Image 1: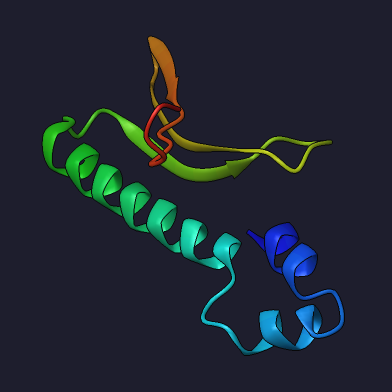
Image 2: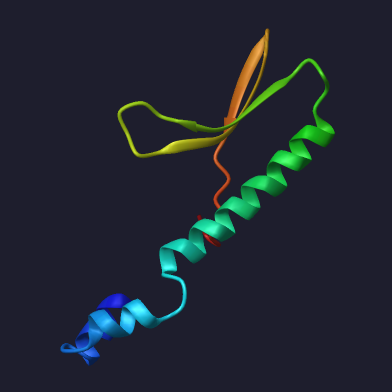
Length: 87
């Protein structure tokens, strides 16, 4: 999207982009955050009390994260829950 604006309006692109609505990355982040919250709510409702759920855990040495980690003494599972269709 940004490149298309820069191509079409090379002299005023920066101003146009600054005056538009939320940047695409903020919109996508907000949608993902809402989806993560829905998953967290579902996990809290359906998992038994012996399971601990950690949310939004950083992966050391990277910019990536794990959205939800459910663990108990005998097993572990991790789930990455992207909200983007086709991911």
